[in-house]
Length: 167
Image (cartoon, rainbow, N blue to C red; front, side, top):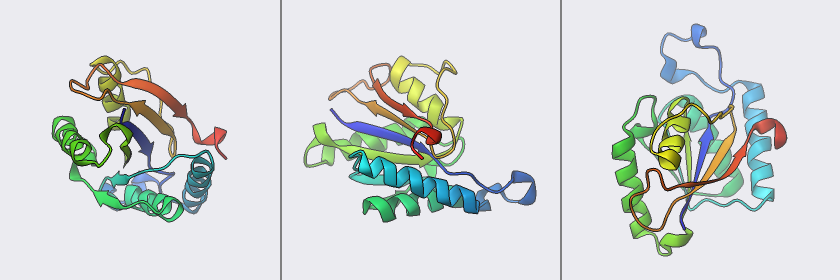
């Protein structure tokens, strides 16, 4: 069954210091912790066939750190920007998995923002957002998707780790 890992970007600079929120970078501490998290996840055996990231600077920087650790290809998606389209993104995921050489073993890392990532995870799990999941900065949620559609309300949560448990 395909695996989906939802990863929140690392600690970023304060919003009030940037007129354009899309340009906020990671802090030095955010870079350091994100690198520690990525290395620990690698050591635990996680692998990604593809990392897909939001176009915002802090998410791209997080993706760069993960790419350096995992040597995974990275792709940018405007759907992963805040308030992106879940339906459009889910259609892309469906197509990507169907084109994967081993669809049942596909492993996709998604780097984005809150509250979208937990809303999307909950929709894949329960068919709606319940506000039950928490995803800290540089944290990760792992879902297994069923081999066939529909995916919403049919996912299985197998991983939810805050960064403090990985560092």
